[in-house]
Image (tube, one colour):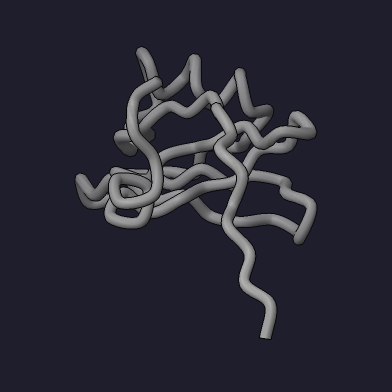
Length: 86
């Protein structure tokens, strides 16, 4: 069996907090995503068009711009063990 190591890549990412205003509104515009409120005081979600189809970002998720300029959400716990500040 052949083993491979992932190449180090610097990505741009921002955290989504589940609101419709402020930094989250700027984030939605940056990604070209649709914000959808949940109602009842719950945080909203972002609907992001990705290479694999539309994905939903939950509050706390990071939105990453990949090496080809594509956007996709990443859960906070996965992001924190995979990435470090450059």
